[in-house]
Image (cartoon, rainbow, N blue to C red; front, side, top):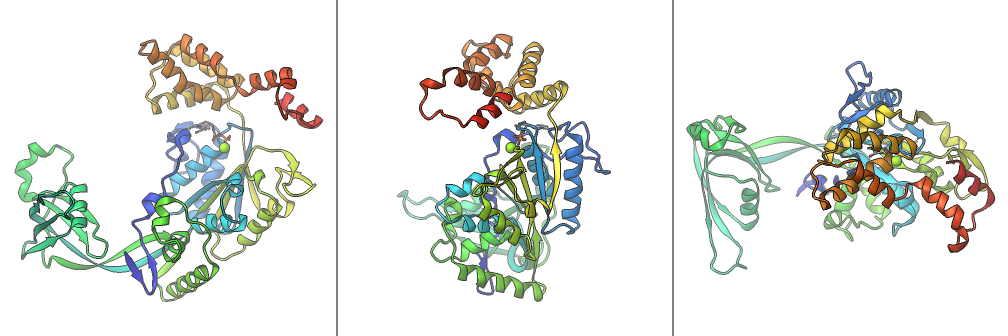
Length: 466
Ligand SMILES: Nc1ncnc2c1ncn2[C@@H]1O[C@H](COP(=O)(O)OP(=O)(O)O)[C@@H](O)[C@H]1O
Ligand SMILES: [Mg+2]
């Protein structure tokens, strides 16, 4: 673990906190724009919705130019019109360095912490700190790895590693942790590797040219590199981006960095945050660190209440604020926690700060293309006729419903030992699972038989319309 002046930072943990459950959007690899920011009809998993994608691209450009920190964007449109997909596309297009945090507004009511703490954490997950550090690395060609096999399984493994440059050769003792890192990277004699002395991280740089005669055994993807020159140990400046939230958690004594793995961080004391903010400000002044404003995406934003909205308003004024992207499918509706109605259920003062991007319902041919992409993504073979039927279903019910039928239809198809999903499979699952319209119809017909079904009169009207 790297230590930078009392406050600890660690780049390794990031990969883990980045894991998100985004199965439904796994096909999205970007916004699919060309250099002029025009949306290609089908690109990077994105189909249609060109005006909204282009607008999102303009926002991205502003983010990259650092011209939009503290601003906010609202994606507004009917369910299943790609609002979340566009937000995911923005995240992908921003690349690894720019932090992107995502939450559903309703989450803040279920976490075991106050609403403002949950929002503070979300904001700090979206603010990166680019830190420059000097580290010592050992870089060279592996001559030999020797791992002792202890007789009993619960004794820690030990071993020896011989590394060389063109000028020198050194023997290192290996502990259990290094052995695991080397094995994880499948390091063998002849590999050129870099080992970070502080963290023990092993990076494989390639195969030594001296070994190029083993080419046949290695396969065509092998990268050959020169055996490094000079000293084995080198000082190297590394730059990495960690989020303020990661720094908070690592430095919060009650939590420790293990909490990041468990995802269960609890509340963070305000003294910890103050200490970190002061330290980060110092680093910025000394030129050791820069702030990287990221993106915070809050989905279903109408689920936030008035207290949360006023928190957002204030948080956006902070000089380190990320770009806030929110999405909603609501029209004029009550602001949660008040008796007032407002467009999208968002108070006017916040609404006033938002750039609004609207999404439109899809045409049949676009639905077809999205279904094609999802079939490919889920490795499902489907006949043209079945796809046509599914497209019709998607058009008449909802895109999301049609996408969900792909998986279930493919299971039904497997059960009958078919290799290609056909019309019969689609119609079976269509009968098996109700879409919202049919389900609502059913509920309205039989509501007396259900508990707690008394809808207020105007809600019932809304449901019939949709
Ligand atoms: N333009 C698009 N291109 C590709 N896939 C899309 C597009 N729009 C929506 N999808 C996919 O359709 C499904 C529903 O879209 P989603 O983004 O969840 O809608 P919303 O958030 O507006 O309710 C998701 O699986 C999404 O990835
Ligand atoms: Mg959504």
